[in-house]
Length: 100
Image (cartoon, rainbow, N blue to C red; front, side):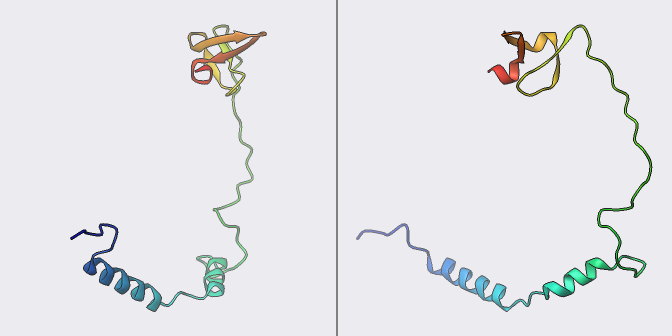
């Protein structure tokens, strides 16, 4: 007699049906209540911006100029050491990661 290996076993069918019924029976919260809960912050005030506090400070970044032994890959636009240069075509340099 031939066996149908694609057919689900009876114990698997029962487990799937019971799991589906459990998911259907769970009551989901009302989306409007969730949004209203998110609008109120810890102090009970609403209207705060999500993601944390607003900081009114300027960020300063020190820019280091490109070194004599560095180049900018014209594919990924990363500054690489000259040992990473794989190809130079028409005055444009490409790194080993992008050339390969």
